Image 1: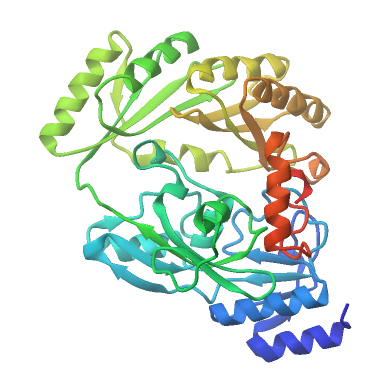
Image 2 (image 1 turned 120 degrees about the horizontal axis):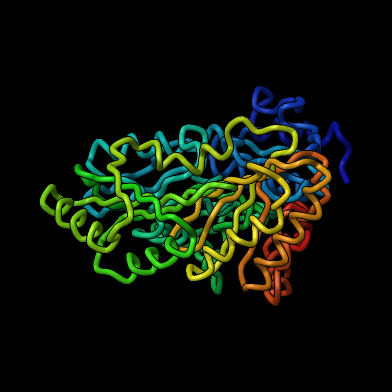
Length: 421
């Protein structure tokens, strides 16, 4: 390993002395304090920084807006934070082809504002879009209720460029500069938490903005009725854009559904929905506040708050909420949930510290037994030893093999991903 002075001098030579600074308390990752923060200004500098860090044997933590830096496990080592703040350009908006090429440090809000000028959008609703960056959203695989209509994040990416730990810049998919044979880099990078390479740019396919929308909320009397209505709506010919369920301990569930169409189309869709719902009460949610429900879960966190992401079969959503209620039955008003009709959901727990560890293990066991998943996103420091990811199943050997091939020295986000990758 190179001495501290040597690696500092090398990094300064790459990015300039003004773009390398000592880390401060706010740069910590899950309680692990790094030594430096570096801010490269282009892809070539990102690659050179990684090559230098890799040769020096130091751990690198890629960082976008920092909005989800507490997701995943604490890193085994965190010597250098690699900030992508300066790579924030929209490189090319081919509006006639409905594609955009953008650097990884660009925030989602900035990107959407630029696309809106041409009546287009990236059909992706992430948490904190004013802070969340393109690279961060891809790395954490963050997406909201729009995925029901437009697909998951990986379905919207048509190309990506990664800076690998050895300093290689590799591209795959649209706008290709260099291919890495045998790897679908966009899909590999999505949700990998920056453990395989640092995303420097991405190419997305776009969708037109719809000028007229309608949101409706309905409230069945119990979970069994909610499950039946969910099946009826999903099996119908309704062309809804988003469908979510909001729930809390001790309260009946509520569901929100979003339509995007012409005025006549909205009227027809609304009428069809009312027929499907029968006697269930329906209200017009003209405010967009209901679609901020997932983000609201993260508001006013306390020292015991835990937020988890889960997946379950759509047919098991009602059962999943019953599992939660059963595990935390002695804790009044202890949990809140926002669940997509696809079976992906978010849970917030606010219970006594003595109940958390045992309760979370019991809930995870229920989800995994039903072929689902239960992953911790945000948790208090005393739960950092609790594995964020759960059982990786048979995929772990393959995941380790890919990690070994692309980052053999475990330079990038060491220990933060599934199975300690």
